Length: 125
Image (cartoon, rainbow, N blue to C red; front, side, top):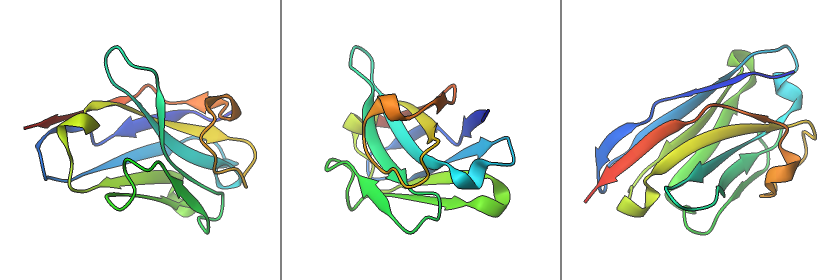
């Protein structure tokens, strides 16, 4: 069982930056692959980025590639999402998720068993 708590969301102007954090409980955090998803009002939840258990492999959605960076610190049971050059279309609730397969870095929601409650990111134009 893994419990996830996101933080770091807020209101930022276009072009600005935010860093999201996701703190996980449980001694097995380091064995899980982790990901960030987001959901805008009236839209389906969509993949943002993923990272394998070791951090050696990452995967990004095309619409954030080059602007967002996912990372993790297994000693702190935390995964991060550094978001730069933010755009109004990045406005959404951002969720972190955990996959028991530590080598998975894909975008399929069904592979992620545990989810946080989400943190709101609002980018003003």
